[in-house]
Length: 429
Image 1 (cartoon, rainbow, N blue to C red):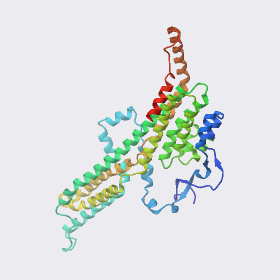
Image 2 (image 1 turned 90 degrees about the vertical axis):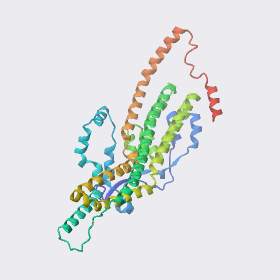
Image 3 (image 1 turned 180 degrees about the vertical axis):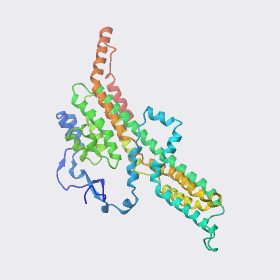
Image 4 (image 1 turned 60 degrees about the horizontal axis):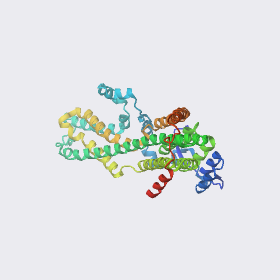
C-alpha cells in the first residue's frame, strides 16, 4: 500500500536489526572530542557500547496491521486538531483575552469550535432522540397514532434532580484532576527552561578558556535536551529534524541510535562535567542541574504513561450518555418542540466540560513545547555569543580594581574553600 493513500498512517515503531556490530557510545564521542583525556577515558568505560539493534526508524504502517480497538477508537481529526491548542500568549493575546468583547466573539465562533466538531456525533444523537420524542408526542396529540400508542414523555424529573449533583461531582473531579496534570507538566517544562540556561551559564563561567571545544559541546547539548525530551513525549516527534543544525552528524547518529534518548543526553552532559577542569563546588552544582533534568523526564513519563484511573473516565462517560439520552423524555411537557434545541445546548455544555478534561489530561500534545524549546535554543545561543564580551568587560573592571586596591588579596577567591566544600558535601552524602 502506498504511503500517501488513505489506508495508511505514519507511526514511530522500533525495528530490530540482527547484526553483531556495535555503535560507539557516549565515551567514544567524548574521547574524540577531547583527545583522549585520561580521566574521561577512565570514566566512560562504565557506559560501554550500545547494540545497533536498538536503532529506531520511521516506517509506514498499514491500518490492517494496527489493533482493531486502535482503528475504531482513534479520532484522527480530533488528534490532528490538538496542534492548534499549542498557544503561546503575547501582550496582545492577553489584552484580547481580558476584553469584554470576548463574550460576543466566543458566541460568534461557536460553530467553528473544535470542541463542537469533536462532539458532533453525540450532539446529533441526543438531538435526534429529542426530535424523535417531539415528533411522536405531536403525532399522538394530533390523533395520527392509535389510541393505544403509549406516550414517551416522563411526568416527573425527580430522577434527574436526584442524580444531577453526582454528575456535577464527577465533572468537577475530572476537570480539576486533568488541570492539575496540565499545570504540573507546564511547571516541569518551566524548570527545564530555567535549568538549561543555568547549566550553560555555569559552563560558560567555570570551564577554563583553554577548553573552548568543551564549551561549544556544552552549548549544543544543553540545547539538545529540551528538543529530545519534546520528541520523547510526542508520538510524532522527529529527533533528526529537530536537531539538524544543532548537533554534528556523528553525534546526531549516536543519539538517534539510543533507545532512551533523554538519558543519552544526560550521559553526555555528565561526561562533559567530569572531563572539565573545574573545581569540586562548581562540578557539584552542575551535577545538581543534570539530576534535575533526570527528575523532569521521569515526572513527564509518569504523567504520560499513567492516566486518571480509567474507571472514572468510563463511568463519567456512561453517566453522561445515559443522563443526556433520557433527558428529552422529561422535557416535552414543559418545553414541547423547544426541547430539541434545549437538549442540544445542554448536551454541548455538559459534554464540553468532560471533553476539555479529557483533552488536557495528556498535556504534552497541547502544550507549546516547540515554542519552549525554540526559546531555550535562542537564549542559549545568545548566552554563548555574548560570553566573550561579558568576560572581557568583567576582566577589565577586575584588573582596574586590583590596580586600585593593591595586590588584590581580597579579589575573587573562587577556589579558596574547594577542599572544605568537598568535605562538607561528602559528609552530607
